[in-house]
Image (cartoon, rainbow, N blue to C red; front, side):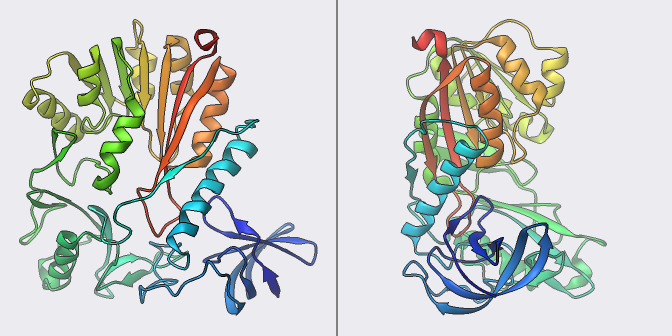
Length: 387
């Protein structure tokens, strides 16, 4: 089947139409003319892979990584960086229009990453003891693509990947399926630890704040954009109280504590909350309290009082319905939603807007170059206060 790619969809697939059907093509570029092989059919939607590039798009480049196409990690290396940013803006726009039903749409700006390669300070490496391979899952499968050099890994982690691959297999923990690793200003940390690879405490300085963490606690993968992201998320927000949901090791908790009288942070991961308390203590900030609980459980059992400002930074699945309801019940003057998935962001924004909020401003940050993923920050205000 021959198709022409119209645009990139949420999820990173190229969109085409042929023979009265919608065709989703992986690893495509807008404007490509392709011969594709249909791999799966679902009603009038076909899922296809590229068999031959008949006429390449002017936006298409040669992917520099030898694993591209087989490794499931990156799916935008075929695009110029400018085209990647444009595609991400279009993905956000599509989700806000189609899912959130926003009209008119806010202006969407995607801030580029200073580093398009070698930016990742966090990764999960898959391990196949039977095949003696270490790398990432192959696209669309659970087979491990044996990766010797990952072009998006920060040099510290690339060196550690090489060290892990050089380790004798009898030294690996029995039954190990994946290995979490993160880098900081003082080395790297592994979970689980084994052989020479320790779950050590790391630190990273962002906007003058020192954050301590390890591989057992989530930390953002691209530190080069964290300062601008925090600056936009918080802006000049200030008041008596703020709520930081899905707070991790306190990336937003610390700066919030400098702008609000008191801050409550809620995070389910106990390793992360231990670091958050430590980070607050080291910063000399005593006006914040950290609660170890799922955000849903906290709203159902402990949520009391009011908050002038609510910041939430949920995982890719977005905020649970009970969390959105809980935020609306608190009725803060302003909300900031930090999201790594435009589709679940749009779903949740629709509920918040229906609950009486309007979008004040929106900006996206390219924390994930060479992939379709993008970090989007939306600031909302009470529609009544906006006037």
